[in-house]
Image (tube, rainbow, N blue to C red; front, side, top):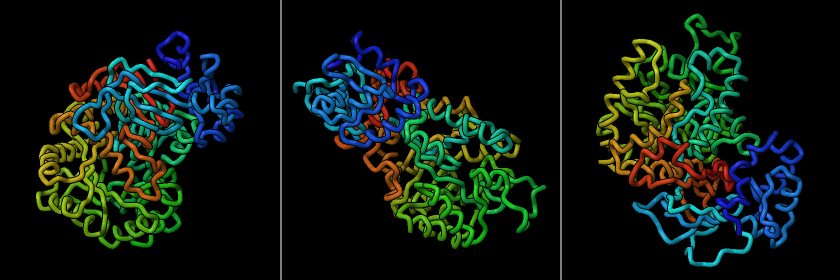
Length: 494
């Protein structure tokens, strides 16, 4: 067996996952990795050699050939064992002790007594009594729009904006977020690059372009762009895939189907006014029930669902009438609407919006006024969500601010204002994983997410400490996370 803390195995922490190797293991090695990646015995990241006790980085010809050999020794070397750990499984109130977690390839293959003998050639990670838990999931993230300023996102060469997103994707993963549910923006290419191992990053559940009416929360045009003519063409934000302006059911169907064609796992519809938009108040209801039903029809025909940006009871009520299955935000709804969300079994994706260091910077006094009005409803929203037993997801909705993006874990830790630590951790793991799975056949990652159990994706964090006792550990990922594993790959080890 090999201990990642032993001197003979120190190279693992330097190699990390294959995406950190020089030139991403070069083009020829990448093709070889793709061939073995989905085979039962494939190793993603490093290949251990039982006879020599050494490892070679992915991209090394010997490593690729060994992973693809199909021999019993190769199969044994695929195994990784997390030992001397306390386990938070993503569902329980407490920690499981006296057990180890076995990983083979991309999946967790067992949670078994630590007293059992380890298979020959097994790679061992000594947790030193740390807590092993599922990778974190942000249910409302913007992979492309989190880091650039709003002005940059709307005016810069979008190749540069995408480059920022590649950098941010790795930073997101290094904060312990192994999955994000992307709530708007052209993230399809980034998702593909991450999935193919070309660049490190989280799993991405993309929505594609926002569906928004003219003058709605997703309409970023200048007044000088009006009126739109049939010969005028698409606006810049539409051309790069940030938004899709739709008026009438025919346009909704066409643009919704375009997002599904590109690979959307769910659709995002702007059903009400927003803080950062220039033309609509928070009280504005957007779209019509016929247009929303068109989006729902397009999604349901593909086996998935629509989620809506909405704050008010009227906007949320119309969305529920149309068959929408998830509400983003909703800080201004009343009790009758909250009770209706619960009765219909819909999801409420809430964000801990407060007037603090994590408030998204506004660009005008009007935006600031809307922001404060929305924030005033946050405490009541979380209280109603708990009182009515609503299925509640957690997300950040970070937009247009590189500093704020680094606060992802801190925004999760502040959930202790409303929930106990176990509830917070469940929300950011198994509960958010359940929401991701609502995509049904459009789910790009159909194994279980957000849990430590047999058959789940091997997305794991080894925490130096107990987050059930100190949620602030999540706000210090550089110090707190000793190991980050995603898809069976060790992306960080210290």
